Length: 77
Image (cartoon, rainbow, N blue to C red; front, side):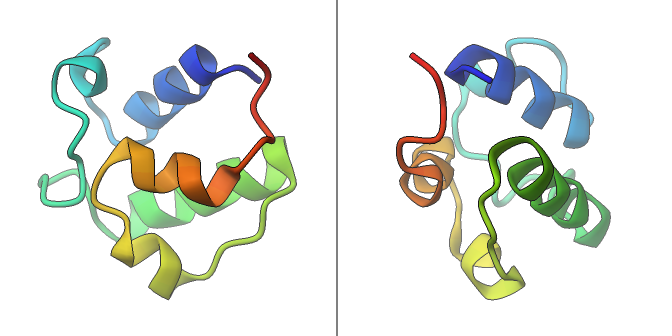
């Protein structure tokens, strides 16, 4: 999975329009950021990238860059 694919999946999980996270990378305060979306993100990180994250770490993320810091080098270029 590359960075673009990850962002697209994240937009689906958060029920955002395509390109919404490119325009505004802050998602943590959005209405879409709820417990269901957090579970979806945890499943995406674990299932697709093999990255384990707990709810506290995920809750601390407010922007895509915060997630990229957790993911590290797991995304393809």
